[in-house]
Image (tube, rainbow, N blue to C red):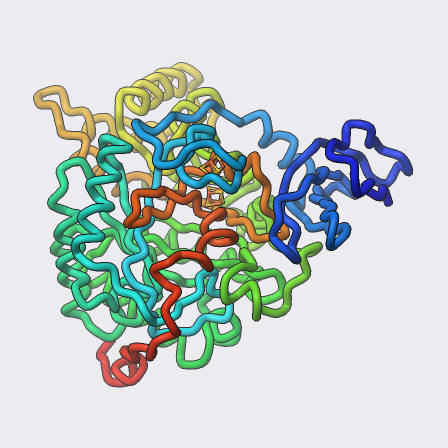
Length: 507
Ligand code: SF4
Ligand code: SF4
């Protein structure tokens, strides 16, 4: 083992010494004990990548940051220049990550702003990455200020997300939703929910559908022991089944979100993929390797920082557990934020089932299509990629397996999204695209063990605060949330709602 010298700020002298591990690069992370920013190195050992840090006070620590060194090394070649927001809210002063945000050193604009409208919740999930103190509901004034600030900084926004706590417990939930929908600069509004209210209240679900809301439903597994380990007591399986049934009946556009914890539900990856393939109303599936921060960071077990799920582990599980539906080669890092943050694949709907884009689209075109965005955007880049792929597949006469079915679907996409007799609004094309393409994302949030400054600087997922700041997600969760003045009041009474109704509600 290479010992880091305590007083040495750089590690350029380090190199492979014993044939067992190789120095890869300098990094800067957090001491897991005091959360102070400290220097470190990335080490490759036995095909995996580790982050080793040295705190002057608490000594050395190490954590796994990638379960596959090849994926890690390849992903670094996907780093792309980001886009800068129209306005910053803080100045560069103490240095990253102490100047959030966004300060002028930040390297990416906000692709997905998250607004936490309440810290009340009707579950107490052992894996929760926030800390619900049951003492805050966002006021309409605060919400209006945030929306205005987002438009000022971004111009137009593809999606904003309402979260919590459990956002459906906000007493003025629909009023806030309508305020967001009334902004012409915002195309989509999504909510992140545990689904308990949706499971117990079909009329509530109908209201979501009427408002064209996109629902991200937390669904980590399809069986109870794993669900209980991650989400606490109660019949979680019944709740998820009822939520799925109500969402499907109301035709709500739905994403399922599965938090994956090593040794708890890492064997459920294939089940979630099959669910995505089987149910039309589920447009996408997001896997989130567990980040051990917030309530979960303090309490959750088992957790060994040297043996956690990382993006390439999810990719491997997708291949081994999906019965051939997905392969490792179907996934790529997403260059929107830092490539260590996201992996993804797009799936084209064909008569014979879903076909991952990388099986028929060449890499360069695929990268153009996914560049700087997490969802298909049916703009000119997309149109030109699809048209040239049709030409190439036509001339290459069946070299791609299932090329007849793929060609038919691509032609249909062009016919529906870009008709010759009229120009459709982008919004209309987005909705058509949603019926033709599904997405599998992997979003690897960081905790104090895995946090890296060069990743956070490229973060595109930002919490929007009422004071105008946009806080990069993992910086807020690990460093700022506990100091947020909105939540400092004494812990309040939990607002109980949902568990009793669950037993009575019809499926
Ligand atoms: S994470 Fe971004 S906004 Fe925060 S201090 Fe670093 S560069 Fe600035
Ligand atoms: S929230 Fe964390 S994992 Fe997600 S993009 Fe930002 S830095 Fe990366």
